[in-house]
Image (cartoon, rainbow, N blue to C red; front, side):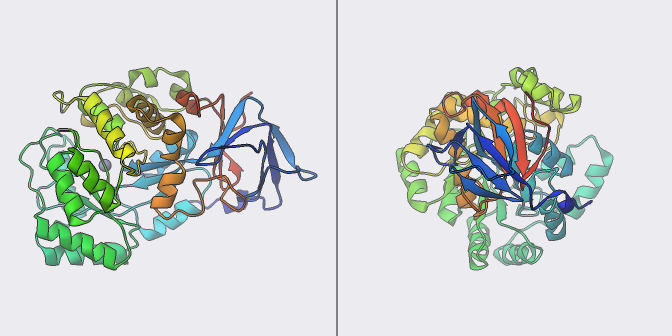
Length: 416
Ligand SMILES: [Zn+2]
């Protein structure tokens, strides 16, 4: 991978003036932000002499967005950045510590964090996608990428290896297949799951669980996980379980866009939106227009009610879309674009636009220990998104992208 640090001119000073500023938590009274090199130099106050001035009247500046659930590669990171998603949190993928360091020093693609591969038993989720693939190479090669875990001892060894290889957190799969079109998949037993979570915590790493059923959610919370990578969607959480999630301190990444496509919706309205179609390849636009439809008996309104029950109980809600590859079975999603769609669905569920924006900025930064980003404040990284209009009152304005900065480097020419 090519390094592009040299693109950062450490002396360059840019002042964005006359703008509304959402700082990651709220709209603040200051109307200007000064970028110097890779960082935010000041918020409000005088514009330094010699600064390049961007008059952003009628526009809103906010922290670069964080997508808390993806499966990505360099191409995915490139698409993400075009949509102002400056950090993607991978939830299982082939990312070595060396590759992640290289990505962290580029300004033309989004940054990434990753657990490496997740923990699953032999034949467990998501290997059914590989065994049923039309691609012979994938069918033959996938056993070499997965190290299956059957026992507590194996779970401890797996976690140790992942952390030694530089995992940022640990991912575990709890999936019986009933909601993803492959009923009867094997699931880790409670003891093995607990051993994995305990070892992750011993090594100061979070454990995040894939779940799609209430039962899986209960198993995950009982095992002490730090977060759910999906909100389960086979039934609504009981009030008792909402209270249990809240008192456990776990966060939830609902992935409403993934649930929406699972229950039969597609995102073709998004795919035909010029603000989206101008930034994606035909392959991804076609994928976005398809629906996975693997759980048509599901009800998105029930899932919305679950999100609101958790939110009202004080559970941190993080925005993530679970996009991976443009496979026929995984339609309705695209890197970058789908995070904006997730924000729209969080608002449809009942969050205010500002609460939804927090779920893609300050909240994931806090929960994932990304202390240098997710907010607009002096000293923070200049990962920024400037949009036309006011997404703090009209959430779809997040797609009216004027400019994106990663580490102080502006990605695209400003559209006027
Ligand atoms: Zn996922």
